[in-house]
Image (cartoon, rainbow, N blue to C red; front, side):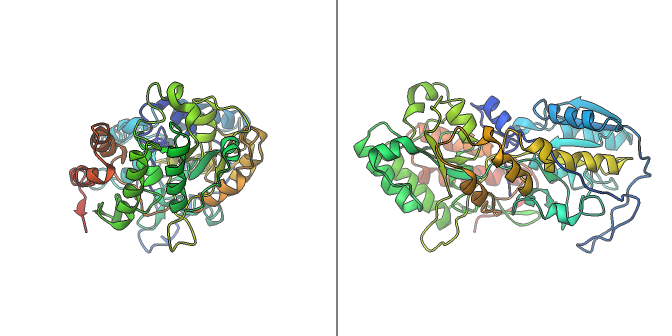
Length: 463
């Protein structure tokens, strides 16, 4: 599963360009529980490969932690609650907006043979290179956490599919900090006032959008104008835009019916002026149209960081519903717009302390219950949902839709070496502004993605 990063969160991940500050906060997830580690033991690879060989361990030695400014308070909280752990904390960009700072520094450390941080916060895109050697004979930067470091019971506690961006060659190289599962947001106060039923299928969503356009001109049921809109809509449609069929082969097949069914639907609603081609985070949108967003198909952080913080929608109006289904489906598939990761360095001389930190940051209820965004670790997410700060703003309890969507994120939108935001932003959004339909942009979008993939060493199939 790919994420736009941790702003991708995203966010990586690649994030919402116009709303970078909001998305950065939304993609922030920090905090978590403890895992036992016995790095002194070689553990057989569950995939049948070479066992992980730790460097000579020196428990109690200082560990160096690289975190972005959003995650910094959580690392400091860990240090305060674990005074016996010696830590050097370094603040860096965390891989935001596609930064390659971490990769560049690791390559330098690989050449000099020293300097690697023990723990780093990054994006799923970072894991694509950190799980492989940066040069022949080098050790991959990220340690395989499933080999004697993090118990399988802990790994099993993460939301279904949420660790997919961490997994390569049968091993798990990171722990997911947060996820941004896509749900259907709607203004319950207006829906009730106008007598509208909340859609449960895409056909109902389309029909309601056309009805809104006729009965309440100017009101919107969505937007495709942000740098991550494709993650809400095309990802949720299981469009094979970023589907790795092999480790080195990417399928980019935008004429697939699972792509065109969504673009055809959206083109109808764009033509009816029920879906905007101006981004929710674009300049001036909040003032001109923020109060006229009846529905929005988007990530779990939209509630607090779009409707509350950006649009200033009054409390007790917004609600969330479960992801929508297509004909013939009994279970929905949905997208993901954000989420960062924590990695432990394979070069760490204190793997126990490093792993305990990463486990705490991602699984501890002590911190995750008050995290800014939805934790990837399921027990921590339950504590997060129980926090009044994460639920009192809404018109109804968001727990059910959030929990359901967390397990329905489609894992076929793969984590690749490049961001999915670049081609969408450079090709699709300008075309929409020029008056082209989404369906008309598919060939150019496919070419742009394919070119990026080839430049990063992938073989590409468009079938």
